[in-house]
Structure formats: C-alpha cells, structure tokens
Length: 276
Figure 1 (cartoon, rainbow, N blue to C red):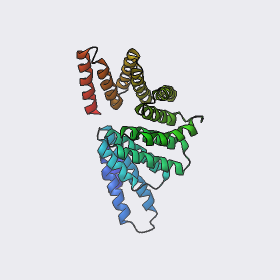
Figure 2: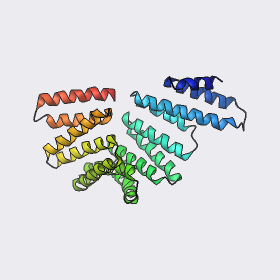
Figure 3: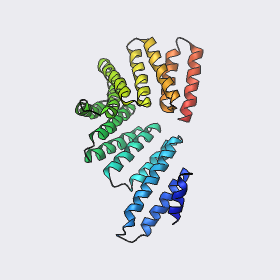
Figure 4: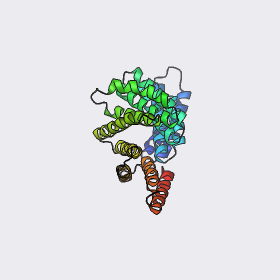
C-alpha cells in the first residue's frame, strides 16, 4: 500500500523512485513463493530503479547512475530490458571516465540484444564498446570487435543509428593506429550517417571528430570551422559533454593564433565540463 501511494507521487517528485523501488522489492521478499504478484512487483521496481538512474545521469552524477542501473539489472530477466539497461550503464560509466566498466556493460548489452536477434541494437552497443575501448587504449581489439558488425550492417536499411557509432569507433581506432586515410573515410561516413539520423548529438560528435582529422591532414581553417560548428550545435541543444570536448579542442587549435581567445574558450570548456 505504501509503495502504491508513493508511486502516485513520483510524477511530481522523481527523487522518490528509489524509495518506491525498495518498497516494491520488500513486498516481493514478503510474498509467498509462487505468488502471482511477485513478477509484476519486480518489474515495477526495476522500472523505478531505471528511472532513478536516468535522473542521476541527468543531474551529472554518472557514478550513481551506474550503481542504480546495476541494481535494476539484478532484477531484469528479459533480454531486451537487460540490453537497454546495460547500454545505459555503459554510457553513464563512460561519462564517469570508467572505461573498463563502460566496455563491459556495452559488451553485455550487445550479447543481450544478440540473444533476441536485435542486430541493429547489438550493432549500436558494439559501436559504443569500440569507442570506449579506444578511450581505454585497447586499439587493436576495438577494430576487431567493430569491423565485422560494420560489414554486417553497412547495407542494411534502417541501421544508421548503429552504423554511426561503429563508424565513430572505427575512425577513432584507425586514427590512433596511424591509418589516417581509412580513419578519414570512416569520419566522413560518420558525419553523413549522423545527418541521416537527424540526431543533433551525433552530428556534433561527428563534426568534432572530423575537425580533428582535418587538422591532422593539414587543413587548420577547416578544422577550426568544423569544431566551432560542433560547439555551436552542442550549445544550442544543451549537450554538455560534447560541448566541453569541442571547446577544449578549439582552445588547443587557437593557442598558436590567438592566446587570449584560446584561454577564454578553454575556461568556458572547463565550466561546461564541471556541469557535465
């Protein structure tokens, strides 16, 4: 009864989600074996834990978000739910800078989606796994994981949201391995795929990545222009993580040209990073 009452208040106060989830799990523990309500109560508790994790992530508390997603996973039985929760946990762990955890959750997400033949969802999870492996300096393994998924999905209609992540990861990994021509090719594909999805965050990430690649190829004006556009899109859409990255990159580009401007940009980036 207490859980049902509190559930009615969650709409106005999302901080109650954890409390509601615990009440529901307590009710499961108090129920008799084989009680028909047990599964329903567990599903409701899992949903509230996921909601609490989403709120923690939105409040720039990624470590707490990971903890709550893991708590939800302890009570998730359906592969689709497991895949979604693992993917969200991977993203939160990445923001927290815990790349080994991000890689593990992304890998588990792909396995869960593979279990129900959800190829596109699994491909997106592998794309993120590749990105997080590169950030954790596991370059060769990242390419080995991502390239077969890219080959399997590249001609599939409707796979853009997975392919954009796979292209991003492969571009990063190939760049770090010094294979710049292929890295540039995947960077361009990443941008076109991002445009196809219409997702502003994906577009901002792609522009930022391509800006770096143009800089490496000796086109500094194009590099600054793309990075500035990435920052602009991120700012307009309140995308703090990519905004901080783009501003940091832009500040580095400006150091040799306009030191006062570079300092201003980097200071703005630090302020954004604290919010992110």
